[in-house]
Amino acid sequence: MALITYLTTVKFGYGEIDGIAADLAGLGVARPLIIADKGIVAAGLVAKVQAVSPALATAPVFEGTPTNPTEEAVEAALGLYREHGCDGLVAIGGGSPIDLAKGVALLATHDGPLETYAAILGGIPKVTSAVAPVIAVPTTSGTGSEVGRAALITLKDSRKLGFISPHLIPRLAICDPELTLGLPAWLTAATGMDAVTHCIETYLSPRENPPAEAIALDGLKRAVAFIERAVKDGSDREARKEMMMAALQGGLTFQKGLGAVHALSHPLGGLKEVSLHHGTLNAVLLPAVLRFNEPDAKAKYAEIRKVLDLPADTDLATWIAALVARLGMPASLSAMGLPRGVIPAIAEAATKDHSSATNPRPATAADYAAMLEASF
Image (cartoon, rainbow, N blue to C red):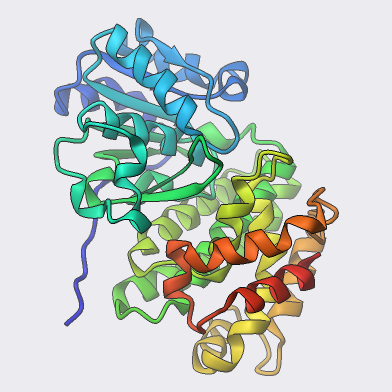
């Protein structure tokens, strides 16, 4: 028997951010904490959201979110939350501020330490409905974290772990494409390929969830159709809207689980010696993972080709690599600055990542090392 759960409330469309004051009131949030990062603040997006809500206009702002959220940042934001007597959070930005907000919402209502609630350490049933309410306001089109049940946070010992629970899904996602119009081309490409990867990996997951698979295929078709337009012209309103929908759909399909791309990109994102962007990592790793998985997912590969209107003999890995190249993204892990010496440790960590369990083809540490070498 399959357990199929959908999911949370989403307000989608141009201008939807203008109703956030009523949304906060509807959730009973009177003293919100805003979670963002320095780039989002500098771009004026936090001020834009604050301008349409009296509660947000005077709200404290935590802008210390790192590229890959950390336990230290969660604790710092939690201190601000408690200092101001907050009763909810508004996360403005990409997946990092949204994931960080989930971590704060968890520790604001549950006793620490944070690792107590990590999925691979048996933490899923320990997360309760007491989690503080979060409104997610994505300003990129990629992570799907605004409707995702997981937060990826790097602990103080450098382990990047997943915290997973339906109670961590934001109570409301406000997806307003207007907030993505100023996104730089490189970040549009990287976050867009994150959405592509989510749709592919969740579709290939062996878990039974036909509604999620249908959503994943539709999201993939939208992303592939519009990502190059969005990268070429950031003011293309139709492309921005379609990419935001594709990212949302990628997040809605997380219920099926991800796969080997994310099993690798999670520990890679936790490295302290080099900062690696998650969406870019996924784009670089996806071709090698597609080659590894094809023997165990031939029927689904054929369906992907059909949905994308590709010839039946198209090699998906080669086709994805060509798309990444057209987007101007790095072609390899070495081009991203990854030192080769970390490969054995990352390969071993990938076998322990929660996403590995839902890869369509079981992978050993040796398999993961081979995929890393192929991507290097």
